[in-house]
Length: 502
Image (cartoon, rainbow, N blue to C red):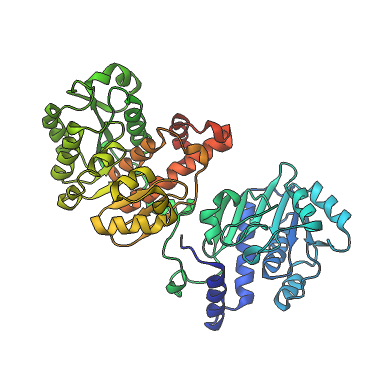
């Protein structure tokens, strides 16, 4: 899903209008397609109130209200939140769509409007859209507080009122369950996704390849985009069709890291998972793993991989279609040798995470010498060790930090954290638009490594697997948050929810 700023969206619409797609057609497409999205969530017996502003967002709201009325939703009303909408096109939409819809003016009958909101089971916010700036105050603040007051379905048109197109919010805002945006995501849907609920983009009739220069230099994903990325399983498929993944992880005091990574690969659909781990953690790890083929390897005195394990590792590298290395392996001379061995001898993609990254940071020349596709998944601290830059410097421009490293070393770089960034060596940039702070805990990154490994195993490119893996992982985190609360988003619960998310 492409991302476009509010100013460029207005310019795009202007250019589309000049090229024969009228503003009227775009507004009708916007409103009716938004209505179709709303229909997926509600029943015909719902009481629906549409809050409309004085601009084009309000016009979209008129179309939505009329469309739902025509579709058999009998109890539909419109509240003019800012008084009469005198925009010429919006007046035309009101005349066309609101003939049988009850219309209230909040500036004249506030009490009646608040009563209508209170009795509604569905509220649609079409007040400001991408044009909002400042803070909502006064009577309008009371209107939105009332709309947010109790459990009901809430839909925002383009961007929730009270949130700017860049994602800023300094006061009350419409608490949307679902935001329906027009044509493409706006920066707010990426960087303030927690304020937008679930976001879905609908067509207004502009071709997605029209005026490509107007979009941001990064893209994001929505749920619908995953359908084109994740291959469907054929009815006559066998386990070999979904690849063989070798995961090298764990040490004496980090058996959980191996468990999370291995199970992440299993849950994300790899055909066969080989779980390679130091044999000193066999009793802690093996009883928890039922699906993968377990490969206990020779350990050193510290309970980490011994160099004597390299022969067996090489054997299974040649059997595997993808290798992941790093979760919980530790950082020392032996694991540095292991990390270098895998990168220099693998003919298939390698995912490097956690201590694998820390080992490579001591000798980044390995990345240039390696002949395989490489995915690296650092958090900001690991990225600091890789680049010798401070964490604050990296965080000040996460997109540039990821992009520069990916291009310099020819790797796919997954810079984890809020709004995880995935950078391809060819310059493509993905910014994640899901997830929550509850995912910031030990083990979360190990699960992500397993998911990405499985998607590469299933045939996705390194970049596509990384983008899809990050987004799916975040959706699972949001699923757990919605069910258990933000403080209880554990890696185990994220793993348990992956089936539901898929």
